[in-house]
Image (cartoon, rainbow, N blue to C red; front, side, top):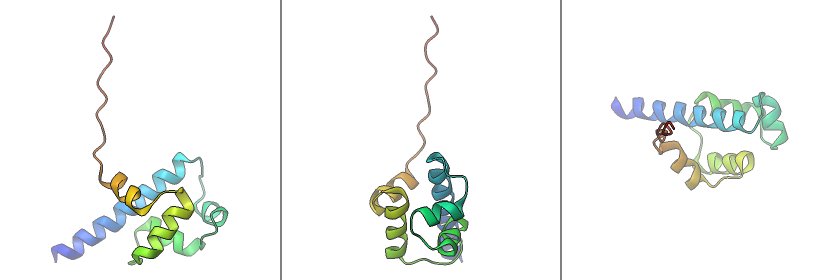
Length: 91
């Protein structure tokens, strides 16, 4: 069941990205963040936990409302490789 494992991995990756973005915005509580964005607390919690199988439309609407980001940009950021910082030359 490789496909099921891949789906679970993707769901977790989406959740981890949403948590990181929320924290980058300075929001510690997912419950308060969901409320501030006009999102359902339980629905948002499930997305962050990687639970269930949300519809693409639901995910797109949530990402746009919460992060002011298109679903395309969200997925692009989800799969981009972190850039390695080059050490600055010593003087």
